[in-house]
Each structure stands twice: as structure tokens, then as C-alpha cells.
Length: 579
Image (cartoon, rainbow, N blue to C red; front, side):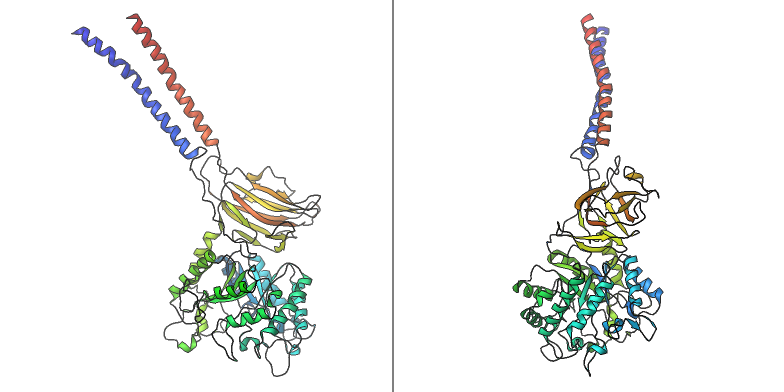
């Protein structure tokens, strides 16, 4: 019996001997499987989702779509203007549409002086443009309102000038005054309404005026962008107004297409949801599609469309229907429709650019007894309405750049300062250009590489770089005497260039959100050169550091297990031979 027990013990001993090694090998295998799954070449660890590209080949459409109409020229106190523009920036709005009345800026022929307040008549508007630049908002200037000296007797400011060349000369002066600062000009407003045209409705007259202005403005600055006057959405066919669809065709019959770069339209939703089907006999948001069809039938389909006024009215139910010609929805619907409508248009209208909400805030001259009071995003007393809150949520998502390419006017680039738009000779995309120190671009992105497509040249400047508030991640870049790491845009000849801003972020962990601040710097001679940015690209290059490290550890651990197993096997063989 004793001999049998010994035999049993001798057969069980190898199993007990190898059991810890088998368990250890299983653990090592599991570790390597995890490593391959999450950190290997095809792993899924921390790879950010790639941004969905917007399928559009139309100019002026890859932009921040969110804008709003303002009444800042009516605001008396500076702090109110400042707070309004700051709130617009906080909401993620990229554009403001502001009227610059000809009658106020040039009250006498060739004289830009306000006799009432004894000051330069540009001053008030210069401060508005300064505020917009400071807060990263681009200005769309509406130019209209004829001064007394440029129109006939018994007319109103809405009456067009007797001599279109006079208006074109004012526009040329305006372009020169704000060159590189205000580059989007809307010429007049709703000429299919008697209240806005100030006389007999005349599509040919407006088309002629627009062409005269276009040629004069482009002669001063070829980068200026002319927007046509939006047409009021109306079914009327009388002296007070003409159906917008009919009027647009009349404009094209009068060679309207030679006078603008972007068609401006109105997009009120009335009492219908954003996706409600268009119909020539119905007023709703998608009526814009019918205008678009007219553009295409007239061979003008290569141009984009922007919206001048876009809104739903949330007047209370006790207000008379006569006071709310735009119909009404609840405040909850107003907020939801506004965001849903922009999402719908961006998905279905590749030719759409900026959408200007009507309106951000008024100065208190519209009482609550009027229906148009209830378009506001913010009350005169600064109470934010539900639509403002929903827009903040919607714009927050579009400001984070995931892996992909973003053009210079994309909402992922927050610009502050005088970044002028310009067109490069070797690219269709618009670029932004700065020629002074202190202008900035901020980019929030999720990835581990950031590249810039721009232009180098003999006048190229320096673009300082901070990543997450420091220059540590870009220590390989040259450094100026102030401690800034920078990208150098200087070269012997003008040429396109792709420059790496930063690479190799998050080498040992999950990729996270980063912030890059780009700032134009003075050069070695103290002068700022030219910095031109066409686009940025966020990339994610999977780091192999963790994979290689874990693989090395797993290999050593496997060897540490296999060597003792090999030795034990050899001992057992020798023992069996001895027995």
C-alpha cells in the first residue's frame, strides 16, 4: 500500500508543480490581449471620433452659421454695447448684422461730421467694430437710408438716391474706412416692400443700383463681399409689396446676378415647424428653397445663400393677431425651432452660410404691446430667454475640433482682432490674414496633433504658440526674446505651407481636450509681419509607446515563467531516468 501511495504522489507532484506557472502564463496572455485590444495598431483606446465633413463646395458656407441682428447704434451707453457684444460672444455667435445708415454717417455731401454732437460721424460705428473685433465677432454691415441731400423732396430715408453713383461713392468710402475689418456688405433691405424702398417698387432700379455699387466697392477692395438685399416674405401683389418669388425673377430679368456674391434671404418660420414643406402659396422657413430654385433656373446656382432675418415669434396669446403678422409659437417652440431649423438647413442646404437670428436685444424702444418685442434672445433688462440658452448649448458642441480639417472661418477657430478674409491665388478656400501684433486665434481640439495650412512669404510674420497655457509642448519651436515659442511665416518667396503647431500630445494616456492659443508677434525688428491661415487640421496618431512598453513587460514576464518551467521539465526527465 505504501508503494502505491508513493506512485500516486509522484504522478500528482508534476501537476502541482506546474499549476502556478500555467496560471501565470494565462495572466500574461490576458495582459497582452488587453494590450493589443486597447493600445495595439488596431486598438480602440482613446481614438477620438473623426469630425463629419460638411459636403459643400460653395464659397462662404464653411462658417459659423450662428449670427444675430443688433441695434448697437441706438445704444447710448458704452457699457450696454459692451455687455451686449460680450453676451453674443458667450453664446457662440460668430456674426452680427448691424445697420450703418448712410444718412447718419454722411449727413452732408462729402462731410462725415455729426453737427448735433460735434463729433466725427464715424466714431460711434468705429466703437461698434472695435467691440466686435475684441469679442471675435465678424460684422455684416447693412448700408441704406438716403440722406436728405441725395434724394428728392417729399421722400423718406428709405427712398433710393436720385443718383446711384452718389450711393456707390459712399459705399467706396465705407470700404476704404473699414478695409480688412468689415468685409461683408448688405446693400439695402427688402426692396419688394414700399416701406423699405420708399416709392414705386422697381426691380430693375434696384438691380441697376446694386451693379453700380458692386463695381465701385470691388475697385477699392477686391476682397469685399457684396450681399444682395433680402426680399420680404410676402404673398402680396400690390402697391405695398410684391411677392418675393415674382420679384426675384424680375431681378434676374434685370441682370441682378452681376451685382452680388451672396444672395441674402429672409427665413421666418411663422407658425410652422422648420421642416414644414415649401409651397408658393405658404410662408414658412423652407420658402427659401423656392428662392434657391429661381437662382438655379437663372444659372446662378454656384452662389451661396445667407439668411438676413431668421426667427419664430413667441408673443403671448393675449396679444391681438393684428399685432403679430408673423404668427406665434410658444417660447419653448421658439427655442427648439431655432436650433432645429439651423440643424436642418445645415444638413439639407449645402449652399447655406450664415443665419442671422432676428434679433439679439433691442434698446428699449420696442414696447411689450408690439409683436416684434417677442423675437428677442435677451430682454432689454438683460434677462436671457430660452432661445438664448438653447443656442449656447448648440454652439458649444461646434466649437470643439475633432480630427479633421477646418477652414479659416469655421466655428472651431475663435479669432480676436483684425483678421481680414482674403482669397489665395492657389486655393479656393478663404484665408484669414493679420498684419499687426496681438491678434489671436484659439482652438479647442481633441487629438494629439495640430497643423496649420497657410502662406509663407518675404513679409511673413511670427505666430506665437501656447498649448494648454504653456510652451512646454512646443519647446522645439524657435523662441523670441519675450519667451514665446513661435511659427515663422517668413520665406524668400510666397508659397503655400503646412506647419506643425504641436505633435505627440498624450503619449502615455487617453487623448484629451487641449487648447491652443496662437498670437501674432512682432518680429526681430519690432514690426509685425503678415500671418495668413487658410485652414487647420486636427490629427490623431496612435502612440506605440504604451503598446511597446506593455509588450516588453509581457515578454519578460513570459520568459520569467517559461524558464523555470523548462528547468523543472529537465529535472523531471533526469529524475525519471534515474528511477
